[in-house]
Length: 331
Figure 1 (tube, one colour):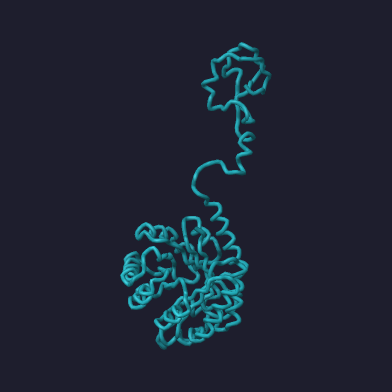
Figure 2 (figure 1 turned 120 degrees about the vertical axis):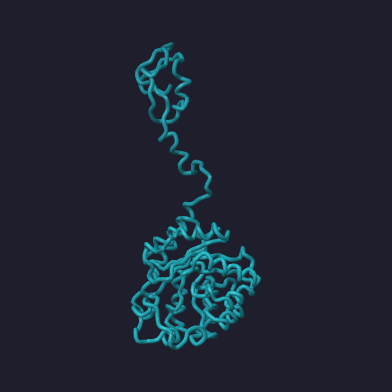
């Protein structure tokens, strides 16, 4: 089954619908399966006194509150439907991460097939119960979480009504950008082993190496932030890929998918023709007369592989030559 690649537009539209549509177009051009936004009302998710994260202070006005920052990044209901229609016209899946109950209800009304739970909500029991009760497909990010917290979240979702097979758990590290030595990509495999769920990876590193590596070790979903321009104002642009980088990442992931194959060890169609050229046969190392005893003194192993396989060397040793051989002639 093909890896599901989510191009995370997030709030990189900066509250502008035209920018949001350009992000959709860029995700389509890059070959993503889905483009994902964020759905929230600032007053529902953050107090007016909440401080910003350090990465947000570094990329936005440091004197501005977290509330004021995200208030400018809201998308209203009408815009959501317009963006979904734009996605349909471009044949890409529209996704959005809800951050509050009203947002869950809006996305449910829109008919979303998949609900993405962000890392920050993994300990939000009422929120998890609400999404679990929808019985939809769920993608659960696990940044900042330990295994016990992931287990608790899964139990809430399943108890609320969502079948476990519908849940994909993403390993993530909630830092923007994430240092390579803190990625701990093998934790994705630990999650798979611990809970028997489909797993994937939500990436916040610079570049494309880590999501490509995640594809190589078994991610079924990969999510990556992207932007039209890293120099735009806003909290997430600096840690996002630009469109050409997103295209390169998706191309690399698709190549890795092809390269992984079916796991059966056999000659590929393209290499069969090279067997005779690359392998060797038993040949005469000097002129041999009919009736001479074949031995290590008058035989050797050389290309091509069109004669007797050297694996039968012990069978040939000690037998009599049935004809005259010239040096380098196949026995």
